[in-house]
Length: 451
Length: 107
Image: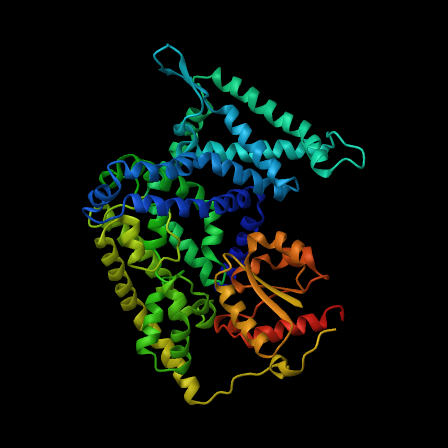
Protein backbone atom coordinates (compact mmCIF):
# COMPACT_ATOMS: atom_id res chain seq x y z
CA UNK A 1 0.00 0.00 0.00
CA UNK A 2 2.72 2.46 1.04
CA UNK A 3 4.89 1.33 -1.84
CA UNK A 4 2.08 1.99 -4.28
CA UNK A 5 1.53 5.47 -2.91
CA UNK A 6 5.25 6.20 -3.10
CA UNK A 7 5.24 5.15 -6.73
CA UNK A 8 2.48 7.64 -7.40
CA UNK A 9 3.80 10.60 -5.36
CA UNK A 10 7.43 10.40 -6.47
CA UNK A 11 6.66 10.96 -10.16
CA UNK A 12 4.12 13.67 -9.30
CA UNK A 13 6.82 15.57 -7.44
CA UNK A 14 9.18 15.09 -10.36
CA UNK A 15 6.62 16.21 -12.95
CA UNK A 16 5.58 19.32 -11.02
CA UNK A 17 9.18 20.15 -10.41
CA UNK A 18 10.06 19.83 -14.08
CA UNK A 19 7.16 21.84 -15.43
CA UNK A 20 8.80 25.04 -16.62
CA UNK A 21 5.68 27.21 -16.29
CA UNK A 22 5.15 26.13 -12.67
CA UNK A 23 8.85 26.58 -11.90
CA UNK A 24 8.73 30.08 -13.37
CA UNK A 25 5.77 31.09 -11.21
CA UNK A 26 7.10 29.46 -8.04
CA UNK A 27 10.70 30.68 -8.36
CA UNK A 28 9.52 34.07 -9.62
CA UNK A 29 7.59 34.56 -6.38
CA UNK A 30 10.70 33.40 -4.54
CA UNK A 31 12.78 36.20 -6.06
CA UNK A 32 10.36 38.85 -4.85
CA UNK A 33 9.95 37.28 -1.38
CA UNK A 34 12.95 39.00 0.28
CA UNK A 35 11.61 42.38 -0.88
CA UNK A 36 8.17 41.57 0.44
CA UNK A 37 9.57 40.49 3.79
CA UNK A 38 11.73 43.62 3.92
CA UNK A 39 8.77 45.86 3.15
CA UNK A 40 6.73 43.99 5.76
CA UNK A 41 9.19 45.12 8.40
CA UNK A 42 8.42 48.73 7.50
CA UNK A 43 4.73 47.94 7.57
CA UNK A 44 5.10 46.35 11.00
CA UNK A 45 6.93 49.43 12.29
CA UNK A 46 4.08 51.50 10.93
CA UNK A 47 1.40 49.31 12.54
CA UNK A 48 3.07 47.72 15.52
CA UNK A 49 0.40 45.70 17.34
CA UNK A 50 0.49 47.50 20.67
CA UNK A 51 -2.17 49.87 22.01
CA UNK A 52 -1.11 53.50 22.11
CA UNK A 53 1.91 52.86 19.88
CA UNK A 54 0.68 55.11 17.09
CA UNK A 55 0.09 58.03 19.47
CA UNK A 56 3.49 57.48 21.04
CA UNK A 57 5.23 57.61 17.63
CA UNK A 58 3.27 60.72 16.66
CA UNK A 59 4.38 62.45 19.85
CA UNK A 60 8.03 61.87 18.94
CA UNK A 61 8.10 62.19 15.14
CA UNK A 62 5.04 64.36 14.49
CA UNK A 63 1.63 63.62 12.99
CA UNK A 64 3.01 62.64 9.59
CA UNK A 65 5.35 59.96 10.88
CA UNK A 66 3.67 57.10 9.07
CA UNK A 67 3.60 58.76 5.64
CA UNK A 68 7.31 58.14 5.16
CA UNK A 69 6.92 54.45 5.98
CA UNK A 70 3.98 54.29 3.58
CA UNK A 71 6.31 55.11 0.68
CA UNK A 72 7.88 51.68 1.14
CA UNK A 73 4.53 49.90 0.77
CA UNK A 74 3.79 51.99 -2.30
CA UNK A 75 7.03 50.87 -3.89
CA UNK A 76 6.49 47.17 -3.16
CA UNK A 77 3.04 45.89 -2.20
CA UNK A 78 1.14 48.28 -4.45
CA UNK A 79 3.29 47.18 -7.39
CA UNK A 80 3.26 43.50 -6.59
CA UNK A 81 1.88 42.32 -9.92
CA UNK A 82 4.44 44.41 -11.78
CA UNK A 83 7.34 43.13 -9.69
CA UNK A 84 6.25 39.52 -10.12
CA UNK A 85 5.78 39.92 -13.86
CA UNK A 86 9.47 40.81 -14.13
CA UNK A 87 10.57 37.99 -11.82
CA UNK A 88 8.41 35.32 -13.49
CA UNK A 89 9.44 36.50 -16.95
CA UNK A 90 13.07 36.36 -15.87
CA UNK A 91 12.90 32.79 -14.53
CA UNK A 92 10.79 31.52 -17.43
CA UNK A 93 13.19 32.98 -20.01
CA UNK A 94 16.11 31.41 -18.20
CA UNK A 95 14.31 28.03 -18.06
CA UNK A 96 13.66 28.17 -21.80
CA UNK A 97 17.25 29.12 -22.54
CA UNK A 98 16.76 32.80 -23.36
CA UNK A 99 18.45 35.74 -21.66
CA UNK A 100 16.71 36.14 -18.27
CA UNK A 101 16.91 39.90 -17.98
CA UNK A 102 15.52 40.43 -21.48
CA UNK A 103 12.67 38.03 -20.66
CA UNK A 104 11.82 40.02 -17.52
CA UNK A 105 11.64 43.31 -19.42
CA UNK A 106 9.66 41.84 -22.32
CA UNK A 107 7.18 40.45 -19.80
CA UNK A 108 6.89 43.80 -18.02
CA UNK A 109 6.27 45.74 -21.23
CA UNK A 110 3.71 43.19 -22.41
CA UNK A 111 1.83 43.48 -19.12
CA UNK A 112 1.90 47.28 -19.24
CA UNK A 113 0.62 47.31 -22.84
CA UNK A 114 -2.57 45.70 -21.53
CA UNK A 115 -2.83 48.07 -18.55
CA UNK A 116 -5.03 51.22 -18.61
CA UNK A 117 -2.87 54.31 -19.08
CA UNK A 118 -5.35 57.13 -18.98
CA UNK A 119 -8.06 57.73 -16.45
CA UNK A 120 -10.84 59.92 -17.86
CA UNK A 121 -12.61 59.97 -14.49
CA UNK A 122 -9.75 61.92 -12.95
CA UNK A 123 -9.58 65.41 -14.36
CA UNK A 124 -7.54 68.34 -13.06
CA UNK A 125 -8.64 72.00 -12.84
CA UNK A 126 -7.62 72.62 -16.42
CA UNK A 127 -9.87 69.81 -17.60
CA UNK A 128 -7.02 67.46 -18.54
CA UNK A 129 -7.50 63.84 -17.57
CA UNK A 130 -4.83 62.05 -15.58
CA UNK A 131 -2.57 59.77 -17.57
CA UNK A 132 -0.25 57.17 -16.07
CA UNK A 133 -0.40 53.75 -14.46
CA UNK A 134 -2.58 53.27 -11.40
CA UNK A 135 -1.66 51.22 -8.33
CA UNK A 136 -5.02 49.49 -8.53
CA UNK A 137 -3.95 47.70 -11.72
CA UNK A 138 -0.39 46.92 -10.70
CA UNK A 139 -1.04 45.38 -7.29
CA UNK A 140 -2.85 42.28 -6.11
CA UNK A 141 -5.73 42.60 -8.57
CA UNK A 142 -3.28 42.32 -11.47
CA UNK A 143 -1.45 39.26 -10.14
CA UNK A 144 -3.12 36.61 -12.26
CA UNK A 145 -3.01 38.69 -15.42
CA UNK A 146 0.66 39.33 -14.64
CA UNK A 147 1.46 35.63 -14.40
CA UNK A 148 -0.28 34.96 -17.70
CA UNK A 149 1.41 37.89 -19.47
CA UNK A 150 4.86 36.86 -18.24
CA UNK A 151 4.44 33.28 -19.46
CA UNK A 152 2.84 34.12 -22.82
CA UNK A 153 5.18 36.99 -23.73
CA UNK A 154 8.34 35.07 -22.92
CA UNK A 155 7.00 32.02 -24.74
CA UNK A 156 6.46 34.08 -27.90
CA UNK A 157 9.87 35.70 -27.50
CA UNK A 158 11.57 32.36 -27.09
CA UNK A 159 9.75 30.70 -30.02
CA UNK A 160 10.75 33.49 -32.42
CA UNK A 161 14.30 33.48 -31.11
CA UNK A 162 14.51 29.71 -31.62
CA UNK A 163 13.24 30.08 -35.18
CA UNK A 164 16.37 32.14 -35.74
CA UNK A 165 14.50 35.27 -36.68
CA UNK A 166 17.07 37.49 -35.09
CA UNK A 167 19.44 40.13 -36.33
CA UNK A 168 22.92 38.67 -36.17
CA UNK A 169 25.81 41.03 -35.67
CA UNK A 170 29.18 40.34 -37.28
CA UNK A 171 31.92 39.02 -35.04
CA UNK A 172 33.75 41.75 -33.16
CA UNK A 173 30.59 43.57 -32.08
CA UNK A 174 30.53 43.76 -28.26
CA UNK A 175 28.27 41.04 -26.81
CA UNK A 176 25.98 43.54 -25.06
CA UNK A 177 25.33 45.33 -28.33
CA UNK A 178 24.81 42.07 -30.18
CA UNK A 179 22.35 40.96 -27.51
CA UNK A 180 20.21 44.07 -27.82
CA UNK A 181 19.96 43.55 -31.59
CA UNK A 182 19.25 39.84 -31.38
CA UNK A 183 16.41 40.54 -28.92
CA UNK A 184 14.87 43.12 -31.21
CA UNK A 185 12.72 41.00 -33.52
CA UNK A 186 11.52 38.49 -30.89
CA UNK A 187 10.62 41.38 -28.55
CA UNK A 188 8.76 43.07 -31.38
CA UNK A 189 6.64 39.95 -31.90
CA UNK A 190 5.71 39.79 -28.21
CA UNK A 191 4.78 43.47 -28.18
CA UNK A 192 2.70 43.16 -31.34
CA UNK A 193 0.81 40.22 -29.89
CA UNK A 194 -0.12 42.17 -26.75
CA UNK A 195 -0.92 45.28 -28.80
CA UNK A 196 -3.43 43.25 -30.85
CA UNK A 197 -4.71 41.59 -27.69
CA UNK A 198 -5.42 45.00 -26.15
CA UNK A 199 -7.42 46.01 -29.22
CA UNK A 200 -9.20 42.66 -29.19
CA UNK A 201 -10.21 42.99 -25.54
CA UNK A 202 -11.48 46.56 -26.08
CA UNK A 203 -13.93 45.19 -28.65
CA UNK A 204 -15.51 42.87 -26.06
CA UNK A 205 -17.81 43.85 -23.21
CA UNK A 206 -14.70 44.19 -21.04
CA UNK A 207 -12.68 47.33 -21.63
CA UNK A 208 -9.43 45.98 -20.29
CA UNK A 209 -7.76 42.61 -19.85
CA UNK A 210 -7.60 43.35 -16.11
CA UNK A 211 -11.40 43.31 -15.81
CA UNK A 212 -11.66 40.25 -17.99
CA UNK A 213 -9.12 38.12 -16.12
CA UNK A 214 -10.49 39.33 -12.83
CA UNK A 215 -13.98 38.18 -13.72
CA UNK A 216 -13.35 34.96 -15.61
CA UNK A 217 -10.29 33.64 -13.75
CA UNK A 218 -9.17 35.43 -10.61
CA UNK A 219 -12.57 35.77 -8.93
CA UNK A 220 -13.61 32.10 -9.42
CA UNK A 221 -10.20 30.85 -8.29
CA UNK A 222 -10.36 33.05 -5.22
CA UNK A 223 -13.78 31.61 -4.48
CA UNK A 224 -12.16 28.20 -4.54
CA UNK A 225 -9.37 29.41 -2.25
CA UNK A 226 -11.89 30.73 0.26
CA UNK A 227 -13.52 27.33 0.72
CA UNK A 228 -12.45 25.89 4.08
CA UNK A 229 -11.42 22.62 2.39
CA UNK A 230 -8.65 24.43 0.47
CA UNK A 231 -6.27 24.88 3.43
CA UNK A 232 -7.07 21.40 4.71
CA UNK A 233 -6.19 19.81 1.38
CA UNK A 234 -3.00 21.86 1.22
CA UNK A 235 -1.95 20.66 4.69
CA UNK A 236 -2.88 17.06 3.96
CA UNK A 237 -0.90 16.83 0.72
CA UNK A 238 2.12 18.76 2.00
CA UNK A 239 2.37 16.42 4.96
CA UNK A 240 1.74 13.30 2.90
CA UNK A 241 4.67 14.18 0.62
CA UNK A 242 6.88 14.70 3.65
CA UNK A 243 5.95 11.25 4.88
CA UNK A 244 7.60 9.85 1.76
CA UNK A 245 10.68 11.98 2.35
CA UNK A 246 9.78 14.52 -0.32
CA UNK A 247 9.76 18.22 0.60
CA UNK A 248 5.99 18.62 0.71
CA UNK A 249 5.38 22.37 0.43
CA UNK A 250 7.93 22.62 -2.39
CA UNK A 251 5.64 20.32 -4.37
CA UNK A 252 2.23 21.56 -3.26
CA UNK A 253 3.19 25.24 -3.50
CA UNK A 254 3.65 24.93 -7.24
CA UNK A 255 -0.10 24.33 -7.45
CA UNK A 256 -1.42 26.26 -4.45
CA UNK A 257 0.81 29.33 -4.24
CA UNK A 258 -0.74 31.36 -7.10
CA UNK A 259 -4.07 31.28 -5.25
CA UNK A 260 -2.60 31.66 -1.76
CA UNK A 261 -0.50 34.63 -2.87
CA UNK A 262 -3.55 36.49 -4.16
CA UNK A 263 -5.57 35.72 -1.01
CA UNK A 264 -2.68 37.06 1.05
CA UNK A 265 -2.36 40.20 -1.03
CA UNK A 266 -6.08 40.88 -0.83
CA UNK A 267 -5.83 41.00 2.95
CA UNK A 268 -2.73 43.15 2.73
CA UNK A 269 -4.26 45.74 0.44
CA UNK A 270 -7.24 46.14 2.78
CA UNK A 271 -4.84 46.36 5.70
CA UNK A 272 -2.76 49.01 3.90
CA UNK A 273 -5.86 51.11 3.48
CA UNK A 274 -7.46 50.79 6.90
CA UNK A 275 -4.63 49.70 9.23
CA UNK A 276 -5.45 47.89 12.45
CA UNK A 277 -9.17 48.62 12.11
CA UNK A 278 -9.33 46.84 8.76
CA UNK A 279 -12.07 44.32 8.06
CA UNK A 280 -9.90 41.69 6.40
CA UNK A 281 -11.50 39.56 3.68
CA UNK A 282 -9.70 36.20 3.97
CA UNK A 283 -9.06 33.71 6.75
CA UNK A 284 -6.59 31.66 4.77
CA UNK A 285 -3.37 33.46 3.79
CA UNK A 286 0.26 32.47 3.44
CA UNK A 287 1.04 33.42 7.03
CA UNK A 288 -2.08 31.64 8.30
CA UNK A 289 -0.80 28.53 6.55
CA UNK A 290 2.74 29.02 7.86
CA UNK A 291 1.83 29.76 11.45
CA UNK A 292 -1.32 27.82 12.25
CA UNK A 293 -0.65 24.59 10.40
CA UNK A 294 2.75 23.33 11.43
CA UNK A 295 4.89 23.99 14.45
CA UNK A 296 8.49 23.06 13.94
CA UNK A 297 8.18 22.02 10.29
CA UNK A 298 6.07 19.57 8.29
CA UNK A 299 3.94 17.29 10.47
CA UNK A 300 4.02 19.87 13.26
CA UNK A 301 6.86 17.88 14.78
CA UNK A 302 7.79 20.42 17.45
CA UNK A 303 5.21 18.61 19.60
CA UNK A 304 6.93 15.31 18.87
CA UNK A 305 10.37 16.77 19.65
CA UNK A 306 9.08 18.02 22.98
CA UNK A 307 7.87 14.47 23.74
CA UNK A 308 11.36 13.21 22.92
CA UNK A 309 13.06 15.82 25.10
CA UNK A 310 10.98 15.15 28.20
CA UNK A 311 9.64 11.61 27.96
CA UNK A 312 12.10 9.54 25.91
CA UNK A 313 13.67 6.52 27.59
CA UNK A 314 15.64 5.26 24.60
CA UNK A 315 19.00 6.87 23.89
CA UNK A 316 18.15 7.24 20.24
CA UNK A 317 15.09 9.43 20.82
CA UNK A 318 16.73 11.38 23.65
CA UNK A 319 19.61 12.33 21.38
CA UNK A 320 17.37 13.11 18.47
CA UNK A 321 15.27 15.34 20.73
CA UNK A 322 18.32 17.32 21.81
CA UNK A 323 19.58 17.56 18.23
CA UNK A 324 16.31 18.76 16.76
CA UNK A 325 14.91 21.14 19.36
CA UNK A 326 16.77 24.29 18.26
CA UNK A 327 16.23 23.87 14.50
CA UNK A 328 12.65 22.82 15.35
CA UNK A 329 11.93 26.11 17.09
CA UNK A 330 12.79 27.78 13.78
CA UNK A 331 10.66 25.41 11.74
CA UNK A 332 13.42 23.17 10.36
CA UNK A 333 12.80 19.46 11.00
CA UNK A 334 14.64 17.32 8.46
CA UNK A 335 16.47 15.68 11.36
CA UNK A 336 13.17 14.34 12.66
CA UNK A 337 11.87 13.38 9.22
CA UNK A 338 14.95 11.36 8.31
CA UNK A 339 16.40 10.62 11.74
CA UNK A 340 13.38 9.30 13.64
CA UNK A 341 12.61 8.40 10.87
CA UNK A 342 9.19 9.66 9.88
CA UNK A 343 9.74 8.49 6.33
CA UNK A 344 7.64 5.38 5.64
CA UNK A 345 7.24 4.75 9.35
CA UNK A 346 3.69 3.43 9.76
CA UNK A 347 3.65 4.05 13.54
CA UNK A 348 4.13 7.79 13.20
CA UNK A 349 1.99 8.20 10.05
CA UNK A 350 -1.29 8.79 11.88
CA UNK A 351 -0.29 11.70 14.14
CA UNK A 352 2.08 13.08 11.51
CA UNK A 353 -0.79 13.68 9.11
CA UNK A 354 -3.49 14.21 11.70
CA UNK A 355 -1.86 16.98 13.74
CA UNK A 356 -1.32 19.52 10.91
CA UNK A 357 -4.79 18.88 9.51
CA UNK A 358 -6.23 19.28 13.02
CA UNK A 359 -4.22 22.48 13.57
CA UNK A 360 -5.32 24.13 10.37
CA UNK A 361 -8.96 23.11 10.88
CA UNK A 362 -9.05 24.38 14.48
CA UNK A 363 -7.22 27.53 13.40
CA UNK A 364 -9.78 28.09 10.68
CA UNK A 365 -12.70 27.57 13.04
CA UNK A 366 -11.14 29.77 15.73
CA UNK A 367 -10.70 32.56 13.18
CA UNK A 368 -14.15 32.11 11.68
CA UNK A 369 -15.89 32.45 15.06
CA UNK A 370 -13.71 35.43 15.97
CA UNK A 371 -11.70 33.80 18.73
CA UNK A 372 -8.49 34.95 17.04
CA UNK A 373 -8.18 37.80 14.50
CA UNK A 374 -7.38 37.31 10.81
CA UNK A 375 -3.83 37.61 9.51
CA UNK A 376 -2.79 40.97 7.99
CA UNK A 377 -1.17 39.39 4.97
CA UNK A 378 2.25 40.86 5.75
CA UNK A 379 5.15 38.51 5.09
CA UNK A 380 6.92 37.08 8.06
CA UNK A 381 9.68 34.55 7.39
CA UNK A 382 8.41 31.00 7.95
CA UNK A 383 11.33 30.48 10.32
CA UNK A 384 9.82 32.91 12.87
CA UNK A 385 9.34 30.97 16.13
CA UNK A 386 5.89 30.10 17.44
CA UNK A 387 4.19 32.71 19.69
CA UNK A 388 6.02 35.63 18.02
CA UNK A 389 4.79 34.49 14.63
CA UNK A 390 1.16 34.34 15.74
CA UNK A 391 1.41 37.70 17.45
CA UNK A 392 3.07 39.51 14.54
CA UNK A 393 0.87 37.90 11.88
CA UNK A 394 -2.39 38.93 13.55
CA UNK A 395 -1.37 41.71 15.93
CA UNK A 396 -3.00 39.86 18.80
CA UNK A 397 -1.62 37.88 21.72
CA UNK A 398 -4.74 35.73 21.54
CA UNK A 399 -3.32 34.16 18.40
CA UNK A 400 0.04 33.63 20.11
CA UNK A 401 -1.62 31.76 22.98
CA UNK A 402 -3.74 29.84 20.53
CA UNK A 403 -0.53 28.59 18.90
CA UNK A 404 0.71 27.36 22.27
CA UNK A 405 -2.64 25.63 22.79
CA UNK A 406 -2.28 23.83 19.43
CA UNK A 407 1.30 22.87 20.28
CA UNK A 408 0.16 21.24 23.53
CA UNK A 409 -2.75 19.53 21.80
CA UNK A 410 -0.20 18.19 19.31
CA UNK A 411 1.88 16.75 22.17
CA UNK A 412 -1.20 14.90 23.44
CA UNK A 413 -1.89 13.41 20.01
CA UNK A 414 1.73 12.46 19.36
CA UNK A 415 2.40 11.04 22.83
CA UNK A 416 0.83 7.54 22.56
CA UNK A 417 2.45 6.90 19.17
CA UNK A 418 5.76 8.27 20.40
CA UNK A 419 5.58 5.85 23.34
CA UNK A 420 5.23 2.83 21.05
CA UNK A 421 8.29 3.90 19.10
CA UNK A 422 10.29 4.71 22.22
CA UNK A 423 9.56 1.29 23.70
CA UNK A 424 10.62 -0.40 20.47
CA UNK A 425 13.95 1.50 20.35
CA UNK A 426 14.58 0.86 24.02
CA UNK A 427 14.20 -2.89 23.50
CA UNK A 428 16.61 -2.78 20.58
CA UNK A 429 19.11 -0.88 22.70
CA UNK A 430 18.89 -3.20 25.73
CA UNK A 431 19.33 -6.20 23.45
CA UNK A 432 22.54 -4.43 22.47
CA UNK A 433 22.11 -4.70 18.75
CA UNK A 434 25.33 -3.52 17.17
CA UNK A 435 25.04 -0.65 14.79
CA UNK A 436 26.07 -1.61 11.31
CA UNK A 437 29.31 -0.39 9.88
CA UNK A 438 30.26 -0.06 6.24
CA UNK A 439 33.19 1.00 4.12
CA UNK A 440 32.58 4.67 4.92
CA UNK A 441 33.61 4.04 8.50
CA UNK A 442 36.88 2.60 7.27
CA UNK A 443 37.94 5.85 5.67
CA UNK A 444 40.39 7.66 7.88
CA UNK A 445 40.19 11.40 7.62
CA UNK A 446 43.71 11.96 8.94
CA UNK A 447 45.45 10.65 5.84
CA UNK A 448 43.52 12.03 2.90
CA UNK A 449 45.22 13.77 0.04
CA UNK A 450 43.90 15.07 -3.23
CA UNK A 451 46.05 15.24 -6.29
CA UNK B 1 40.54 23.29 -2.77
CA UNK B 2 37.80 20.69 -3.34
CA UNK B 3 34.24 21.95 -3.38
CA UNK B 4 31.49 19.84 -1.89
CA UNK B 5 28.14 21.53 -2.55
CA UNK B 6 24.83 20.50 -0.99
CA UNK B 7 21.41 21.34 -2.36
CA UNK B 8 17.91 21.19 -0.92
CA UNK B 9 14.79 23.30 -1.29
CA UNK B 10 15.63 26.30 0.82
CA UNK B 11 19.18 25.36 1.72
CA UNK B 12 18.12 25.41 5.38
CA UNK B 13 18.67 21.96 6.80
CA UNK B 14 21.49 21.21 4.37
CA UNK B 15 23.29 24.29 5.65
CA UNK B 16 23.21 22.75 9.12
CA UNK B 17 24.79 19.57 7.77
CA UNK B 18 27.24 21.56 5.64
CA UNK B 19 28.53 23.48 8.64
CA UNK B 20 29.06 20.19 10.53
CA UNK B 21 30.93 18.75 7.55
CA UNK B 22 33.05 21.89 7.26
CA UNK B 23 33.88 21.61 10.96
CA UNK B 24 35.16 18.07 10.51
CA UNK B 25 37.11 19.00 7.37
CA UNK B 26 38.74 21.93 9.13
CA UNK B 27 39.56 19.79 12.12
CA UNK B 28 41.53 17.38 9.89
CA UNK B 29 43.05 20.23 7.85
CA UNK B 30 41.45 18.94 4.66
CA UNK B 31 41.41 21.35 1.71
CA UNK B 32 37.63 21.05 1.32
CA UNK B 33 34.95 23.70 1.13
CA UNK B 34 31.43 22.56 2.05
CA UNK B 35 28.49 24.83 1.25
CA UNK B 36 24.71 24.53 1.00
CA UNK B 37 22.38 26.20 -1.48
CA UNK B 38 18.77 26.27 -2.60
CA UNK B 39 18.12 23.95 -5.54
CA UNK B 40 16.65 26.83 -7.55
CA UNK B 41 20.15 28.31 -7.73
CA UNK B 42 21.81 25.07 -8.76
CA UNK B 43 22.44 25.95 -12.38
CA UNK B 44 24.05 29.31 -11.62
CA UNK B 45 26.12 27.94 -8.76
CA UNK B 46 27.37 24.90 -10.64
CA UNK B 47 28.35 26.86 -13.74
CA UNK B 48 30.06 29.52 -11.64
CA UNK B 49 31.97 27.38 -9.14
CA UNK B 50 32.16 23.99 -10.81
CA UNK B 51 31.99 21.94 -7.60
CA UNK B 52 33.75 18.58 -7.28
CA UNK B 53 30.71 16.83 -5.82
CA UNK B 54 27.00 17.66 -5.77
CA UNK B 55 25.05 16.16 -2.88
CA UNK B 56 21.27 16.34 -2.74
CA UNK B 57 19.24 16.35 0.47
CA UNK B 58 16.95 13.29 0.61
CA UNK B 59 13.89 15.58 0.54
CA UNK B 60 14.78 16.55 -3.04
CA UNK B 61 15.54 12.99 -4.16
CA UNK B 62 13.19 13.60 -7.08
CA UNK B 63 15.82 15.91 -8.59
CA UNK B 64 18.36 13.10 -8.78
CA UNK B 65 17.71 11.86 -12.30
CA UNK B 66 17.59 15.32 -13.81
CA UNK B 67 20.69 16.52 -11.96
CA UNK B 68 22.68 13.43 -12.87
CA UNK B 69 21.70 13.83 -16.51
CA UNK B 70 22.98 17.40 -16.43
CA UNK B 71 26.28 17.11 -14.59
CA UNK B 72 27.53 13.53 -14.62
CA UNK B 73 30.11 12.21 -15.36
CA UNK B 74 31.98 15.51 -14.90
CA UNK B 75 30.64 16.04 -11.41
CA UNK B 76 29.41 13.14 -9.29
CA UNK B 77 25.83 13.61 -8.05
CA UNK B 78 24.41 11.58 -5.15
CA UNK B 79 21.56 11.74 -2.66
CA UNK B 80 22.65 11.83 0.98
CA UNK B 81 21.81 8.76 3.04
CA UNK B 82 18.59 9.24 5.06
CA UNK B 83 19.99 8.18 8.38
CA UNK B 84 23.18 10.22 8.19
CA UNK B 85 21.13 13.19 7.10
CA UNK B 86 18.69 12.81 9.96
CA UNK B 87 21.46 12.53 12.51
CA UNK B 88 23.36 15.42 10.93
CA UNK B 89 26.36 13.13 10.83
CA UNK B 90 28.87 15.51 9.28
CA UNK B 91 31.74 13.06 9.47
CA UNK B 92 30.07 10.23 7.57
CA UNK B 93 28.66 12.49 4.88
CA UNK B 94 32.07 14.12 4.46
CA UNK B 95 33.61 10.68 4.04
CA UNK B 96 30.92 9.87 1.51
CA UNK B 97 31.79 13.03 -0.43
CA UNK B 98 35.50 12.22 -0.31
CA UNK B 99 34.89 8.69 -1.57
CA UNK B 100 32.94 10.16 -4.48
CA UNK B 101 35.78 12.53 -5.36
CA UNK B 102 38.28 9.67 -5.11
CA UNK B 103 36.22 7.33 -7.28
CA UNK B 104 35.58 9.95 -9.92
CA UNK B 105 36.63 8.72 -13.31
CA UNK B 106 37.32 5.20 -12.06
CA UNK B 107 34.16 3.94 -13.61
